[in-house]
Image (cartoon, rainbow, N blue to C red; front, side, top):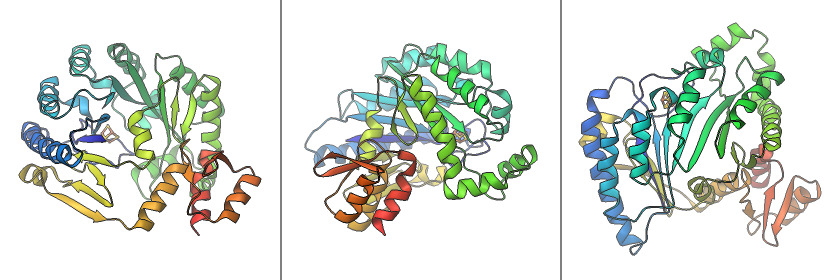
Length: 364
Ligand code: SF4
Protein backbone atom coordinates (compact mmCIF):
# COMPACT_ATOMS: atom_id res chain seq x y z
CA UNK A 1 0.00 0.00 0.00
CA UNK A 2 1.17 3.52 -0.75
CA UNK A 3 0.28 6.83 0.91
CA UNK A 4 0.09 10.32 -0.58
CA UNK A 5 0.24 13.40 1.70
CA UNK A 6 -0.64 16.84 0.34
CA UNK A 7 0.99 20.09 1.54
CA UNK A 8 -1.02 22.91 -0.09
CA UNK A 9 1.22 25.94 0.63
CA UNK A 10 3.42 27.83 -1.86
CA UNK A 11 5.34 31.10 -1.62
CA UNK A 12 4.29 32.05 -5.14
CA UNK A 13 1.82 30.82 -7.80
CA UNK A 14 3.50 29.62 -11.00
CA UNK A 15 1.88 30.60 -14.30
CA UNK A 16 0.94 27.06 -15.34
CA UNK A 17 -0.12 25.71 -11.94
CA UNK A 18 -3.37 23.78 -11.63
CA UNK A 19 -2.53 22.12 -8.30
CA UNK A 20 -4.35 22.71 -5.05
CA UNK A 21 -1.94 25.28 -3.64
CA UNK A 22 -2.31 28.61 -1.83
CA UNK A 23 0.06 31.54 -1.39
CA UNK A 24 -1.99 33.56 1.14
CA UNK A 25 -2.75 30.99 3.85
CA UNK A 26 0.60 30.67 5.60
CA UNK A 27 -0.97 31.71 8.91
CA UNK A 28 -2.90 28.41 8.80
CA UNK A 29 0.15 26.14 8.60
CA UNK A 30 0.20 25.03 12.20
CA UNK A 31 -3.58 24.38 12.30
CA UNK A 32 -3.21 22.49 9.02
CA UNK A 33 -0.53 20.22 10.50
CA UNK A 34 -2.74 19.46 13.52
CA UNK A 35 -5.60 18.46 11.21
CA UNK A 36 -3.29 16.55 8.88
CA UNK A 37 -2.05 14.50 11.85
CA UNK A 38 -5.66 13.57 12.71
CA UNK A 39 -6.24 12.63 9.07
CA UNK A 40 -3.08 10.49 8.86
CA UNK A 41 -3.85 8.79 12.16
CA UNK A 42 -7.42 7.93 11.17
CA UNK A 43 -6.35 6.75 7.69
CA UNK A 44 -3.52 4.53 8.92
CA UNK A 45 -5.52 3.15 11.84
CA UNK A 46 -8.30 2.13 9.44
CA UNK A 47 -5.79 0.71 6.95
CA UNK A 48 -3.97 -1.33 9.60
CA UNK A 49 -7.24 -3.08 10.43
CA UNK A 50 -8.26 -3.44 6.78
CA UNK A 51 -4.87 -4.83 5.73
CA UNK A 52 -4.19 -6.95 8.75
CA UNK A 53 -1.09 -5.14 9.95
CA UNK A 54 0.92 -4.76 6.72
CA UNK A 55 3.51 -1.99 6.38
CA UNK A 56 3.42 0.83 3.85
CA UNK A 57 5.59 0.34 0.73
CA UNK A 58 5.90 3.98 -0.16
CA UNK A 59 4.97 7.50 0.94
CA UNK A 60 4.89 10.53 -1.37
CA UNK A 61 4.69 14.06 0.05
CA UNK A 62 3.58 16.45 -2.68
CA UNK A 63 2.15 19.91 -3.00
CA UNK A 64 2.21 22.74 -3.10
CA UNK A 65 5.73 23.19 -1.88
CA UNK A 66 6.48 20.67 0.89
CA UNK A 67 9.82 22.33 1.72
CA UNK A 68 7.94 25.46 2.76
CA UNK A 69 7.23 23.67 6.07
CA UNK A 70 9.77 23.58 8.84
CA UNK A 71 11.41 20.19 9.43
CA UNK A 72 9.77 20.12 12.90
CA UNK A 73 6.41 19.69 11.13
CA UNK A 74 7.79 16.55 9.44
CA UNK A 75 9.17 15.30 12.77
CA UNK A 76 5.56 15.30 14.02
CA UNK A 77 4.18 13.78 10.82
CA UNK A 78 6.67 10.89 10.85
CA UNK A 79 6.31 10.33 14.59
CA UNK A 80 2.62 9.78 13.82
CA UNK A 81 3.25 7.58 10.75
CA UNK A 82 5.76 5.32 12.52
CA UNK A 83 3.14 4.40 15.13
CA UNK A 84 1.53 2.38 12.33
CA UNK A 85 4.27 1.23 9.98
CA UNK A 86 8.01 0.62 9.82
CA UNK A 87 10.05 2.77 7.40
CA UNK A 88 8.75 2.19 3.85
CA UNK A 89 11.19 1.30 1.06
CA UNK A 90 10.65 4.67 -0.58
CA UNK A 91 9.67 8.05 0.88
CA UNK A 92 9.65 10.92 -1.57
CA UNK A 93 9.26 14.62 -0.90
CA UNK A 94 8.76 17.32 -3.53
CA UNK A 95 10.64 20.58 -3.20
CA UNK A 96 11.31 23.90 -4.90
CA UNK A 97 14.94 24.87 -5.54
CA UNK A 98 14.78 28.39 -4.07
CA UNK A 99 13.67 27.27 -0.61
CA UNK A 100 15.85 24.19 -0.13
CA UNK A 101 18.22 24.26 2.86
CA UNK A 102 21.01 21.83 3.77
CA UNK A 103 19.89 21.40 7.40
CA UNK A 104 16.27 20.78 6.32
CA UNK A 105 17.50 17.99 4.01
CA UNK A 106 19.59 16.45 6.80
CA UNK A 107 16.61 16.50 9.17
CA UNK A 108 14.33 14.89 6.60
CA UNK A 109 16.84 12.16 5.81
CA UNK A 110 16.97 11.40 9.54
CA UNK A 111 13.16 10.80 9.45
CA UNK A 112 13.64 8.13 6.76
CA UNK A 113 12.98 10.19 3.62
CA UNK A 114 15.24 8.75 0.93
CA UNK A 115 14.06 10.44 -2.26
CA UNK A 116 13.67 14.11 -3.21
CA UNK A 117 11.98 15.46 -6.31
CA UNK A 118 13.11 18.97 -7.20
CA UNK A 119 10.98 21.28 -9.39
CA UNK A 120 13.75 22.51 -11.69
CA UNK A 121 11.53 22.98 -14.81
CA UNK A 122 14.25 24.72 -16.87
CA UNK A 123 17.92 25.71 -16.75
CA UNK A 124 17.25 29.01 -18.56
CA UNK A 125 16.24 32.13 -16.68
CA UNK A 126 14.03 33.45 -19.52
CA UNK A 127 12.01 30.21 -19.51
CA UNK A 128 11.77 30.31 -15.71
CA UNK A 129 10.48 33.90 -15.86
CA UNK A 130 7.97 32.89 -18.55
CA UNK A 131 6.73 30.01 -16.37
CA UNK A 132 6.57 32.45 -13.42
CA UNK A 133 8.88 30.32 -11.33
CA UNK A 134 10.56 32.01 -8.39
CA UNK A 135 13.98 30.37 -8.69
CA UNK A 136 16.89 31.05 -11.03
CA UNK A 137 19.43 28.90 -12.87
CA UNK A 138 21.90 29.38 -9.98
CA UNK A 139 19.38 28.19 -7.36
CA UNK A 140 19.14 24.83 -9.14
CA UNK A 141 22.80 23.96 -8.54
CA UNK A 142 22.65 25.15 -4.92
CA UNK A 143 19.58 22.99 -4.31
CA UNK A 144 21.20 19.89 -5.82
CA UNK A 145 24.18 20.47 -3.53
CA UNK A 146 21.84 20.70 -0.50
CA UNK A 147 20.06 17.50 -1.56
CA UNK A 148 23.12 15.42 -2.34
CA UNK A 149 22.77 13.13 0.71
CA UNK A 150 19.36 11.82 -0.36
CA UNK A 151 19.69 8.29 -1.73
CA UNK A 152 17.64 9.22 -4.81
CA UNK A 153 17.24 12.59 -6.52
CA UNK A 154 14.71 13.31 -9.25
CA UNK A 155 14.09 16.55 -11.10
CA UNK A 156 11.10 17.86 -13.08
CA UNK A 157 11.50 19.60 -16.43
CA UNK A 158 8.92 21.33 -18.63
CA UNK A 159 9.16 21.45 -22.42
CA UNK A 160 6.87 23.09 -24.97
CA UNK A 161 7.62 26.69 -23.96
CA UNK A 162 8.04 29.41 -26.64
CA UNK A 163 11.82 29.30 -26.12
CA UNK A 164 12.15 25.67 -27.17
CA UNK A 165 14.32 24.85 -30.15
CA UNK A 166 16.34 21.76 -30.95
CA UNK A 167 19.43 23.47 -29.60
CA UNK A 168 17.69 24.74 -26.42
CA UNK A 169 16.19 21.35 -25.59
CA UNK A 170 19.56 19.67 -26.11
CA UNK A 171 21.15 22.14 -23.68
CA UNK A 172 18.35 21.61 -21.13
CA UNK A 173 18.93 17.85 -21.25
CA UNK A 174 22.72 18.25 -21.14
CA UNK A 175 22.46 20.34 -17.95
CA UNK A 176 19.97 17.93 -16.41
CA UNK A 177 21.89 14.75 -17.14
CA UNK A 178 25.17 16.22 -15.85
CA UNK A 179 23.60 16.40 -12.36
CA UNK A 180 23.93 13.57 -9.80
CA UNK A 181 20.30 12.48 -10.30
CA UNK A 182 18.84 9.04 -10.97
CA UNK A 183 15.39 10.07 -12.19
CA UNK A 184 13.82 12.76 -14.34
CA UNK A 185 10.22 13.71 -15.16
CA UNK A 186 9.68 15.74 -18.34
CA UNK A 187 6.24 17.26 -18.89
CA UNK A 188 4.81 19.04 -21.88
CA UNK A 189 3.51 22.52 -20.99
CA UNK A 190 -0.27 22.77 -21.17
CA UNK A 191 -1.59 26.12 -22.34
CA UNK A 192 -5.16 26.88 -21.29
CA UNK A 193 -6.91 29.00 -23.95
CA UNK A 194 -7.38 32.55 -22.58
CA UNK A 195 -4.91 32.14 -19.69
CA UNK A 196 -2.21 34.76 -19.10
CA UNK A 197 0.40 32.14 -20.03
CA UNK A 198 -1.38 31.55 -23.34
CA UNK A 199 -1.34 35.32 -24.08
CA UNK A 200 2.33 35.66 -23.15
CA UNK A 201 3.21 32.65 -25.27
CA UNK A 202 1.58 34.46 -28.18
CA UNK A 203 3.55 37.68 -27.40
CA UNK A 204 6.86 35.78 -27.51
CA UNK A 205 5.97 33.49 -30.39
CA UNK A 206 3.19 35.08 -32.49
CA UNK A 207 3.24 32.11 -34.90
CA UNK A 208 1.53 29.88 -32.38
CA UNK A 209 -1.35 28.61 -34.49
CA UNK A 210 0.70 25.61 -35.39
CA UNK A 211 1.63 24.98 -31.77
CA UNK A 212 -2.07 24.97 -30.80
CA UNK A 213 -3.05 22.71 -33.64
CA UNK A 214 -0.21 20.40 -32.80
CA UNK A 215 -1.07 20.31 -29.12
CA UNK A 216 -4.72 19.62 -29.81
CA UNK A 217 -3.88 16.57 -31.86
CA UNK A 218 -0.94 15.50 -29.74
CA UNK A 219 1.64 15.94 -32.49
CA UNK A 220 3.65 18.74 -30.90
CA UNK A 221 3.99 16.82 -27.66
CA UNK A 222 4.86 13.77 -29.69
CA UNK A 223 7.62 15.56 -31.62
CA UNK A 224 9.17 17.44 -28.70
CA UNK A 225 8.63 14.52 -26.38
CA UNK A 226 10.24 12.11 -28.82
CA UNK A 227 13.25 14.37 -29.10
CA UNK A 228 13.56 14.74 -25.32
CA UNK A 229 13.20 10.95 -24.92
CA UNK A 230 15.97 10.36 -27.49
CA UNK A 231 18.34 12.80 -25.79
CA UNK A 232 17.64 11.25 -22.42
CA UNK A 233 18.09 7.72 -23.72
CA UNK A 234 21.50 8.73 -25.10
CA UNK A 235 22.40 10.00 -21.63
CA UNK A 236 21.40 6.69 -20.00
CA UNK A 237 17.88 7.60 -18.85
CA UNK A 238 15.37 4.90 -19.72
CA UNK A 239 11.79 5.97 -20.42
CA UNK A 240 9.47 3.83 -18.29
CA UNK A 241 6.41 6.05 -18.59
CA UNK A 242 5.39 8.73 -21.04
CA UNK A 243 6.87 11.50 -18.82
CA UNK A 244 9.25 9.55 -16.56
CA UNK A 245 12.85 8.45 -17.07
CA UNK A 246 15.12 6.42 -14.80
CA UNK A 247 18.90 6.22 -14.65
CA UNK A 248 19.11 3.16 -12.44
CA UNK A 249 16.13 3.84 -10.18
CA UNK A 250 12.40 3.72 -10.97
CA UNK A 251 9.99 5.25 -8.50
CA UNK A 252 8.11 2.53 -6.59
CA UNK A 253 5.33 4.98 -5.85
CA UNK A 254 4.78 5.79 -9.53
CA UNK A 255 4.87 2.14 -10.56
CA UNK A 256 2.36 1.16 -7.90
CA UNK A 257 -0.01 3.90 -9.04
CA UNK A 258 0.30 3.00 -12.74
CA UNK A 259 -0.23 -0.67 -11.96
CA UNK A 260 -3.64 0.29 -10.63
CA UNK A 261 -2.87 -0.59 -6.99
CA UNK A 262 -4.96 0.92 -4.23
CA UNK A 263 -3.56 4.06 -2.57
CA UNK A 264 -4.25 6.14 0.51
CA UNK A 265 -4.47 9.94 0.41
CA UNK A 266 -4.29 12.53 3.20
CA UNK A 267 -4.43 16.33 3.27
CA UNK A 268 -6.48 19.03 1.54
CA UNK A 269 -7.21 17.72 -1.95
CA UNK A 270 -5.20 14.52 -1.34
CA UNK A 271 -6.67 11.65 -3.38
CA UNK A 272 -6.90 7.98 -2.43
CA UNK A 273 -8.61 4.92 -3.91
CA UNK A 274 -9.68 1.76 -2.15
CA UNK A 275 -11.40 -0.87 -4.32
CA UNK A 276 -13.88 1.08 -6.44
CA UNK A 277 -14.08 4.15 -4.18
CA UNK A 278 -11.95 7.17 -5.06
CA UNK A 279 -11.94 9.72 -2.25
CA UNK A 280 -10.49 13.15 -1.66
CA UNK A 281 -10.06 15.49 1.34
CA UNK A 282 -11.70 18.92 1.06
CA UNK A 283 -9.64 21.21 -1.20
CA UNK A 284 -10.36 24.38 0.78
CA UNK A 285 -7.80 24.65 3.59
CA UNK A 286 -10.13 26.27 6.15
CA UNK A 287 -12.80 23.62 5.60
CA UNK A 288 -10.21 20.86 5.68
CA UNK A 289 -8.91 22.16 9.02
CA UNK A 290 -12.45 22.12 10.44
CA UNK A 291 -13.12 18.56 9.30
CA UNK A 292 -10.00 16.68 8.15
CA UNK A 293 -11.79 13.34 8.25
CA UNK A 294 -14.41 14.33 5.70
CA UNK A 295 -13.74 12.67 2.33
CA UNK A 296 -15.63 13.32 -0.85
CA UNK A 297 -16.28 9.90 -2.38
CA UNK A 298 -16.72 8.87 -5.99
CA UNK A 299 -17.93 5.34 -6.77
CA UNK A 300 -16.23 3.97 -9.87
CA UNK A 301 -17.85 1.39 -12.08
CA UNK A 302 -15.91 -1.64 -13.36
CA UNK A 303 -15.90 0.11 -16.74
CA UNK A 304 -14.33 3.26 -15.18
CA UNK A 305 -11.63 1.17 -13.49
CA UNK A 306 -10.87 -0.80 -16.66
CA UNK A 307 -10.65 2.43 -18.66
CA UNK A 308 -8.26 3.97 -16.12
CA UNK A 309 -6.10 0.83 -16.10
CA UNK A 310 -5.99 0.87 -19.90
CA UNK A 311 -4.74 4.47 -20.03
CA UNK A 312 -2.26 4.14 -17.17
CA UNK A 313 -0.92 0.78 -18.31
CA UNK A 314 -0.34 1.79 -21.92
CA UNK A 315 1.47 4.96 -20.87
CA UNK A 316 4.16 2.93 -19.13
CA UNK A 317 6.24 -0.22 -19.31
CA UNK A 318 3.74 -2.19 -17.19
CA UNK A 319 1.37 -2.58 -20.13
CA UNK A 320 -2.13 -4.06 -20.03
CA UNK A 321 -3.82 -7.42 -19.85
CA UNK A 322 -5.40 -8.52 -23.13
CA UNK A 323 -8.06 -10.42 -21.21
CA UNK A 324 -10.99 -8.09 -21.96
CA UNK A 325 -9.69 -6.63 -25.22
CA UNK A 326 -10.88 -7.32 -28.73
CA UNK A 327 -8.35 -9.96 -29.97
CA UNK A 328 -8.51 -8.65 -33.56
CA UNK A 329 -7.55 -5.16 -32.43
CA UNK A 330 -4.71 -6.56 -30.31
CA UNK A 331 -3.39 -8.44 -33.34
CA UNK A 332 -3.57 -5.31 -35.50
CA UNK A 333 -1.65 -3.26 -32.90
CA UNK A 334 1.08 -5.89 -32.67
CA UNK A 335 1.33 -6.53 -36.40
CA UNK A 336 1.54 -2.78 -37.06
CA UNK A 337 4.32 -2.51 -34.49
CA UNK A 338 2.34 -0.14 -32.24
CA UNK A 339 2.36 -2.63 -29.36
CA UNK A 340 4.35 -5.67 -28.37
CA UNK A 341 3.53 -8.76 -26.34
CA UNK A 342 5.02 -8.87 -22.83
CA UNK A 343 3.75 -12.44 -22.39
CA UNK A 344 0.78 -14.44 -23.69
CA UNK A 345 -1.71 -12.31 -21.79
CA UNK A 346 -0.36 -8.77 -21.85
CA UNK A 347 0.89 -6.12 -24.24
CA UNK A 348 2.60 -2.74 -23.93
CA UNK A 349 2.80 0.28 -26.23
CA UNK A 350 6.05 0.57 -28.17
CA UNK A 351 5.80 4.34 -28.11
CA UNK A 352 4.31 5.72 -24.90
CA UNK A 353 3.48 9.03 -26.62
CA UNK A 354 0.87 7.15 -28.67
CA UNK A 355 -0.66 5.47 -25.62
CA UNK A 356 -3.77 7.67 -25.32
CA UNK A 357 -4.56 7.24 -28.99
CA UNK A 358 -4.21 3.45 -28.69
CA UNK A 359 -6.29 3.34 -25.51
CA UNK A 360 -9.10 5.31 -27.15
CA UNK A 361 -9.06 3.03 -30.19
CA UNK A 362 -9.09 -0.11 -28.04
CA UNK A 363 -12.00 1.15 -25.98
CA UNK A 364 -14.09 2.39 -28.93
S1 SF4 B 1 5.45 25.41 -6.86
FE1 SF4 B 1 4.18 23.78 -7.79
S2 SF4 B 1 2.31 23.78 -6.60
FE2 SF4 B 1 3.36 25.70 -6.13
S3 SF4 B 1 2.48 27.17 -7.55
FE3 SF4 B 1 4.32 26.36 -8.54
S4 SF4 B 1 3.58 24.61 -9.77
FE4 SF4 B 1 1.96 25.14 -8.31
